[in-house]
Length: 100
Image 1 (cartoon, rainbow, N blue to C red):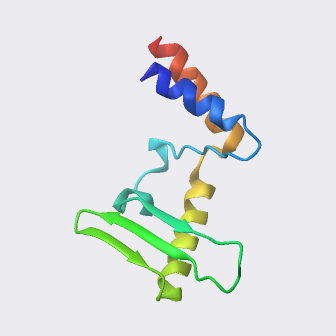
Image 2 (spheres, helix red, strand yellow):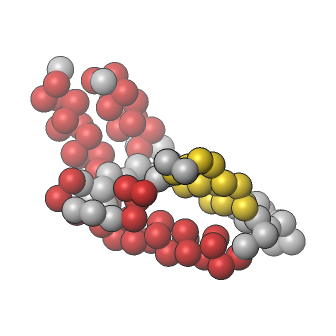
């Protein structure tokens, strides 16, 4: 686990990578319901694709813009609850030091 945490902090230092941690102190939040990914494409003519994982199974959707919008809002809520990029990297560094 130590090496994984160090890898995350190293990746978070890259200009094209953002690492954000939502702490347990945030309480119940929509990110606990399952993971999701929104795939965006450079061509505006290409629809975004939503990939969801949940206890009920997986879902891939590109035909429901309202669902994609909902998960964009969930993502922004999770970002607001996070420690922020710098705070997240500091948290992961501290955690890695504690378990070393």
